[in-house]
Length: 145
Image (tube, rainbow, N blue to C red; front, side, top):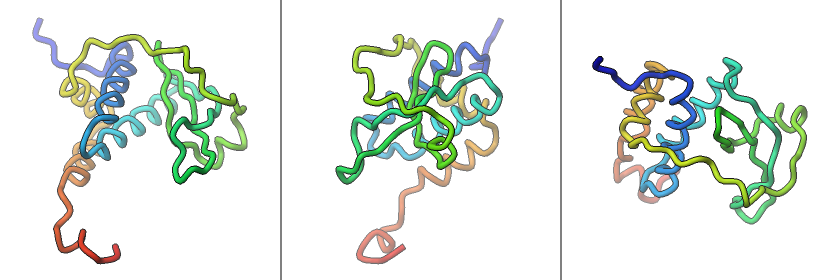
């Protein structure tokens, strides 16, 4: 049986975990973080993942206190940026528990990306093309966007 990467639920949280792990060390992580967030949003919408609450962020921007949404999918826990609705409806869980670790994942980045791209659909391929294109030098240097 010749099996291509499928979007079965057992592999989805593991694929999100692999993409998230690689995004933390990537030189251009925008697409990987977008892929993670979009996949988790779709899992939540389908009822396959649950928002548990808010955590204080470990690395707040500009030294401001910041919260992230804790999402539980399968055996894995993830953090995504909160919406205004999340602040109204979710309980605040306080500081992040440093003792919990997600299970190890035996999956390569390319396989994980394919699984998530198939799960999300055409939008993922369009977004990849858009976010991975380098910005032209004349837009980077001394100009406002």
